[in-house]
Image 1 (cartoon, rainbow, N blue to C red):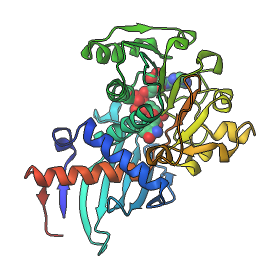
Image 2 (tube, helix red, strand yellow):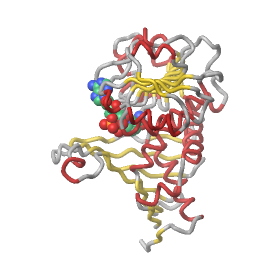
Image 3 (cartoon, protein in one colour):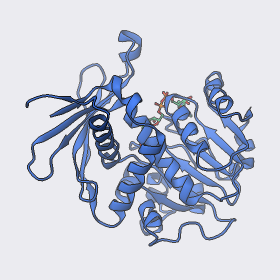
Image 4 (tube, rainbow, N blue to C red):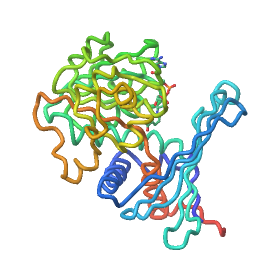
Length: 321
Ligand code: NAD
């Protein structure tokens, strides 16, 4: 069995490899060659932790396995460790033998940023110049770095409930040589692409804050009850997602579906756009929205890529298991 420790991941995989792995697995999901297993997520009654498993099988990429982990809210204050903790386990699809154990913390951020990037690449207007961010926490910096590579953006604007966190975005913009401006939510009307990545349970971004022709990637809502954008925005947009079943139950679309203002049949897999079986954006005025719920197959895809890269670089730790 191969082990790739968390500390080694950053030197092995970057945004390009993560993008390719996630785009490939979204395509495989839409063509029926990859599927996710039902998600388990439990409050374990210890340390207020939420723990669970996300797994699946991708016949094209030959990745089988699961990500185990969750959220330990007191890690940072008590132990100076990050609150999200996860590990990916891969199995040989021919034999069932354990193939690899891979640190999943950085990979989670990379695969989540890759998902919104895939949506921007396939759905945003080619002439997009202004990117707007809603959220300025840990994931937001990964989201912004990856998104900036998808179009020739000229400016970053951002809003966050906690404005003291906005320098996190300004720093990424500065690294990319772009100006950053903190705006009110109404200022996001100037954005051609908007990424939302907060842990909110109430909508911040209203339909009136978004101009026609924008592409919105909603990346924060991955749990029942969370919400970042007004249901009216979902109603107004052409909606794409990683997995429809997750979008309508625990993704951003859950509210519009439960309020009866969007039909499940009007939510499309992003993989269909990648495969060319859905035309995606059809006009410059169309508002497109990606509901990125986060699926186990994304984790397996980037973990498989890391294992291959670790073997190629001669840094994979092999144990007899
Ligand atoms: P973080 O704690 O570092 O940042 C949280 C962000 O949410 C901050 O910008 C904060 O100001 C904002 N926020 C908090 N409460 C808010 C409220 N009530 N209204 C509006 N904004 C609020 O968290 P993070 O690691 O950046 O994760 C952000 C979200 O992304 C979490 O909800 C996490 O579960 C989700 N996530 C989704 C995926 C996916 O695949 N879709 C993957 C990883 C994380």
